[in-house]
Length: 164
Image (cartoon, rainbow, N blue to C red):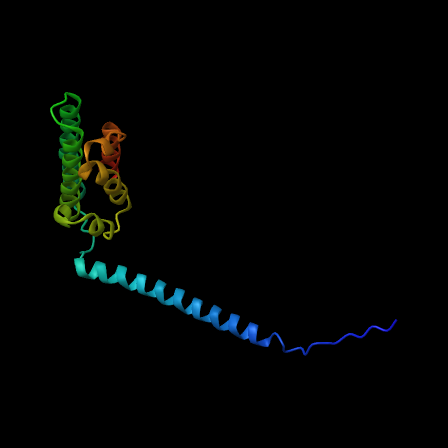
């Protein structure tokens, strides 16, 4: 029995490789340009906000600022514990308190910044607090029920005490 084999030319699959290569290059270029655009957006957001460099107050005045805001935070915790304020109002005051602290400690007036603008400032500890406060501060009552106000106050206290 005689069997014949017909060989295909070596470049028969050449078109598939060419198409795959072109798609790969186009996708890579697209990802590169998207990453570059995102980087430029972050830079332009900081320029648009006109964020000044961190102005470190002298050691004595920073200690006084920390003490003042620590007392205010303790008064806020007492008001919440004694049920003089609601959880939502507590988070709103807590947000104002940390914004005031950052303004006094750095000279950057973050009191009127949006959450996005604060996140673009580059203070990691402030970013985590803003993410924690945001939902209970603006949400309806039932969405804030699973948040622990005392734990949020303790995190804020740690940020204030560890601020340099």
